[in-house]
Amino acid sequence: MTLTPSRQATPELKALVHLFYPSLDDLGEFTEVAESELPEVPRKLLWHDAHMTVAVESHHGVPVDVRVLNKHVTPAHYSRRILLTRQSDGQIVQFGIVRLNSTFLGEEVRREIESEATPLGRILIEHNVLRDVRLLSLWRIEPGGDLVTVFGLDKPQTCYGRTALIYCNGLPAVELLEIVAPVE
Image 1 (tube, one colour):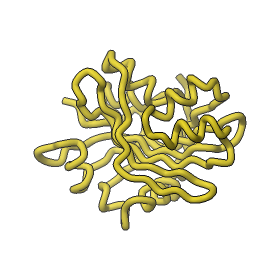
Image 2 (cartoon, helix red, strand yellow):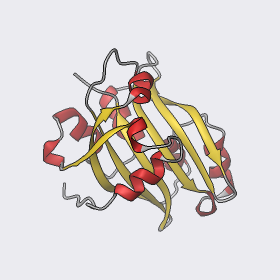
Image 3 (spheres, rainbow, N blue to C red):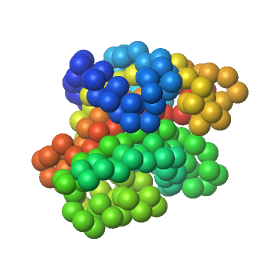
């Protein structure tokens, strides 16, 4: 696969993190990395142009649920800090921050997203929204206290993530920070 991530995605990362944290360091220490620097499983989960919902469900072999930790709503944007968990056992497989421009999505799609019952990727797929996922950057993350807590770790473990944009019907509608749970 030939993906060319942007090497200037740090402002997007900071903007997303600042929606829920006073500083980037509160979430973790982020280092931008190349695809070749990712271990095998994180590379499989992050180095693609598909929805993370599809990637984690394929990897884990079971559907995932979304758990919204908190959200911010403005007239133009809906943002949320989330976890994806396996339906089979509730195991956390991903942490994420998403900000979507509500004006670029239809009313029915927006309502379903804001109901917080279904992962974003599944909603966009089920509503057949024309979408294009664009990888911006890949990250090695030394987790801060909150990330250690949400992943249920005994001690900090290196994890990996990505920033991406989803274009819906040709418009940049969704900004994403997606961090997969550490794997051994």
